[in-house]
Image (cartoon, rainbow, N blue to C red; front, side, top):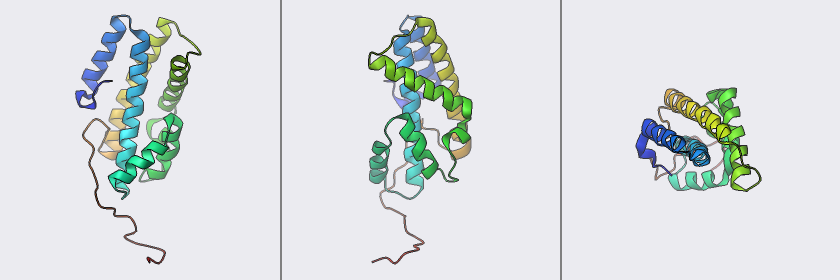
Length: 165
């Protein structure tokens, strides 16, 4: 897959180049994979921002399997406890979920789509990718494209409501 350090413009160009060279399914898989990766990276940063150590954040991210797991965990770690659809909008999340279902059908050999279907989906996903980048930067100051910040020491329980032993 494409490294995150390529940035959104270069990555979108490469995905479009796949489409131009008739690698429609590959462009589709790359697009939805990239979106899931950005969601995971941003969620990880939210977990770290909440006070967890980076190692613990990695464990929590592994437990949030698939796009549904990411969306369920989002509300827990968002600083204002918003759902992902409240941040990105219903249309963007619907597009992501539909593409995730199609990806699963494709990779598990349950269904193959027409090249035109892939092209339509890839164009929608590239639009959603831009929405994700802009929206996360606006709300969090981090959009998943930059190098993630680490936390080596937990800052949880700085204001405990239960007795520390």
